[in-house]
Length: 155
Image 1: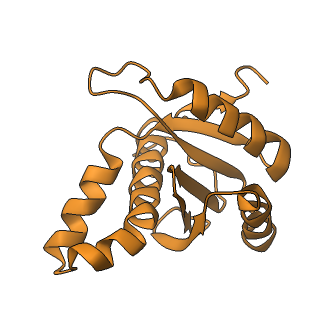
Image 2: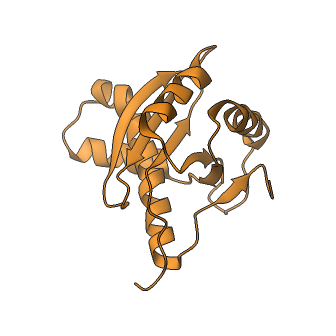
């Protein structure tokens, strides 16, 4: 392995139209786990700030809309606005990371575990956040560099 891994809790956020999935990991990055599903709306950033206060992460990872070809998808403008709100409201370093296939991967894992379609809907966003976090942790452990890019860029 040899690559330097920054010790510390991280939170991952999978921001959807109706719900926001949140996941966390332990300080050593060994286990990523679901935390909560937060409804989108007026109090979303406030609730995420409360979760940050509880978990004290070294950073928050926001799933970033990248298409299958690896380019930023059509939802980038909307997600840029979300990233700006999180950067301002969470008082934690924010990184945007490729969320390609995270929801599809989470859906497959939940289906394989025997979850019904109805029960999957309630936790799919958390599972996608776990997937985003696991990928980011693996990348940093492999390369010694944080996944994604800092938001705002260069800031």
